Image 1 (cartoon, rainbow, N blue to C red):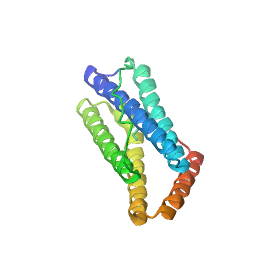
Image 2: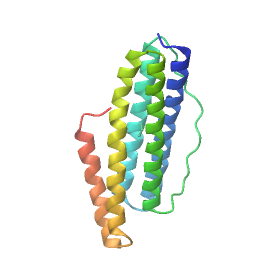
Image 3: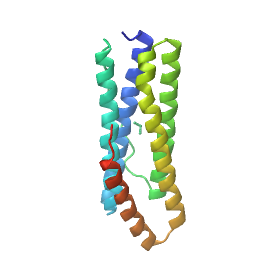
Length: 171
Ligand code: FEO
């Protein structure tokens, strides 16, 4: 059985994951409109993954005798200025999510809820991977600079990332 405190914190995380899914969906749309197919596919994929992160939490809360709350969401930005800016926002957002997961781990220990502590380890590992991927992409963007040909190759590169990550056992 989840404590009230643990349940409230997990429900807050459900909202963060749902908002992440919306943010990446908005990024997918922006990239698609700009004509970068690879980047937009990457963002659609990221949006789907975030929904899976949310669902995993929903199921967990309900299975542990709690009640998962599906709340209203903040609307994401719709314009991102440049690809560099967009991936910078993505990295910043993932760092925020990692901090939020860390806070949940902290609460689980305070509550001596070892089942939730164990459940959260998947998210801890996932955040390391997501932050690392965003940093790798930003490094590539910085290498390209303003080179249009480079941007075309980058788009193809990101498309490969989608293919690679979708064959890996996922959420
Ligand atoms: Fe579910 Fe990207 O954090």
